[in-house]
Structures are given as C-alpha cells and as structure tokens.
Length: 284
Image 1 (spheres, one colour):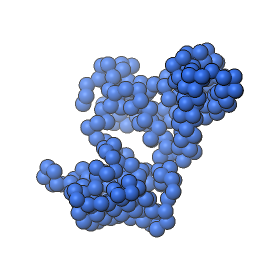
Image 2 (image 1 turned 60 degrees about the horizontal axis):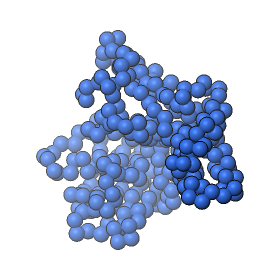
Image 3 (image 1 turned 135 degrees about the horizontal axis):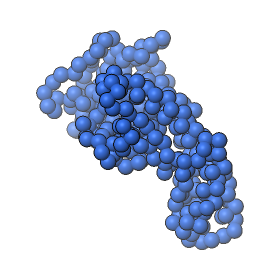
C-alpha cells in the first residue's frame, strides 16, 4: 500500500498544502516549527481517523479557521481516496472513503495499516500497563477487524457492567444481581476471545522480534514478550478461570463498583535477556 499524495486545508500551519510522494523512501526536511510533524499527523488521521499526538480535533484547526480538511490517495491493488473533514462549529468529524461516508471509524481502521515511532513511544516499555495494552490492541486491531469489533463490544460491556456495579453498591436490589449475571456472561465470553487473540499475537510477534533483533545484535541480547493474564491460567482453561476469578472477586467488585478481572487489567512484559526493560532498560 502506498500513499501517493496528500492535501491539507487549515490543518495546523498548513493553510493549503499539496504533496506528491515517491513510491520509494520519502524524507521530510525543514526547519523547526515548519509543519513536518503535522504531515505525519495528517497521514495518521487518514489511516485511523485519530490524532497521532492525542490532541483534540479542535486543537488541530488552523488559527481563525472553522474547519480542517485532509485528503489522501492510496494505491495498492486498487486506488482509494480518503478524506477527513472536521468542523469546529459543529464539533463533528466526517470520514469519506471513495466519496462515501463512513459512519464508524472502526470501518476505516485496518484498511490502511500504519506504523508510527515517536519519542512518546518509550511508554510502551517504561510506562503503565495500560500503555502496553493500548499498543498491542492497536497493532492487532489493524490486522484483524474481528478483534477490533470484539474489543469495542468488550469495552462497551465494561462500561455497562461498571455502571450496574455502582447501582448495586448504592441501592442493592435482587433484580440488579440478575442483570449483573447477564453482563458478566458477556464479559467472560468477549474477554476470553480477546485473551486468545493476544496469546496468538504475542507468540507470532515475539518470534518476529527475536529474528529482527538478531540482525542488529546477533545473539548478544535476546528480546522477549510475556503476556500475563488471569493469574497465568492455561490456554485451555481461559473461560473457566475467568469465570472463577470473577466469582472470587464479586464482593470486592460491588464494594468498589469496579471491574477487577479481565484483559483490561492484563500486563505485557518486554524483556532483554530475561530482564524487564521497565526496570533495567535504558530509554534508548
């Protein structure tokens, strides 16, 4: 997949910018504050509908303007035209693919896979577990639309179940417990599928990392990824262990009105020679 050209209107410093890219390697060169990073930010918008720097959409609009527009043309087996339009007045973002409106951003993710590397990415190894989960989920989601849909449903279930736990804590009623059981079944089903996808990813990605790293360091350093989930249950007992853990933590979940068990609390460990990079690795 190749990004052939990019057109920006009212996007940060780019009032109206058109760029045609080479099909080979492209370098973006310029002085400080000239909008180099903004170009990468715009490309990320086209591929994911989201902001690379996590800024709010309204912060991207050029000063004294009411909207921004990003257009890009991708070529692979076929050509695709993607457009992102944001209106400050309506606080609304519209995504177009080949002149047809995409109603859900999830329908765009994965069509044009993108890999980014920024200074903030050191949080993958040095940051909180949530940073590592977000990284892994974003990679798998771009490769598997099925996983993305499961993840969206799981997060929705988390929110519904959390709200119900709060209701039970504040006003205990038997019928609420019955509702909780329904949401728990959904949580266990979706959560088990997420864990299974993550296990497969770590195995495949881990092998790739070892081989790639070997070309740089030979066998002086050996990298690895570990995925800790559900107190390290066996792969064949994920659903069963998930259910038991929720039952064990049921009272605590009600007291704290919080989902305490599931892949939203799992951890990924990145290691070099079996040493945790978070504790022993340098920032470089």
